[in-house]
Length: 200
Image 1 (tube, rainbow, N blue to C red):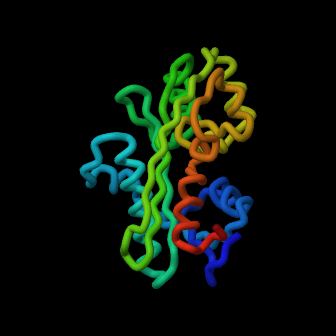
Image 2: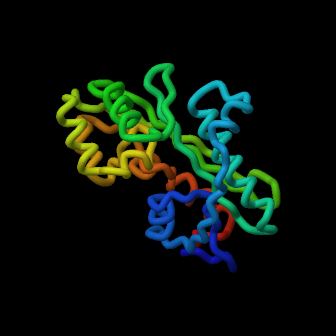
Image 3: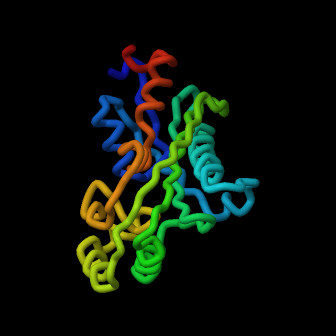
């Protein structure tokens, strides 16, 4: 499906994002940006969780594109908000437990942003919003869940991945599955078709 001479560069270390792109027939070269995301967030003028996700996805793409002339670079980021409270990836098991306790029995929103950059220019950016409702979780269930997923609880904001055991946490999910995983794939493919790098 990919007809450009060189692969798409993914400025993210997310194995899930890489797998989504590869499954869609897009050759991917992974080059994580390795940025101080919290520092960028603090220095930005981002006012909303959607803005934070957009700023971070753009920062990742620009950082890698600066070293890869003429290449298409995709940055991606995701933020989670429960009302006005914004969440970042938990730093340890205790933080993951606290996030799950806070989200238990409530509906939160995920903001998934992507930015495509080439030679310092933003070609495309998009932010999707999804709503997820967690079941009311007992402390015993949360601890059991954390025992099962181990370090995986630290890999994603909210301490879960719905594509695996994390699905047991939820009673309702509304929105695009790929965006919930961290990559709004359909808008990306539409742009890539218009750009002429994916078969139309």
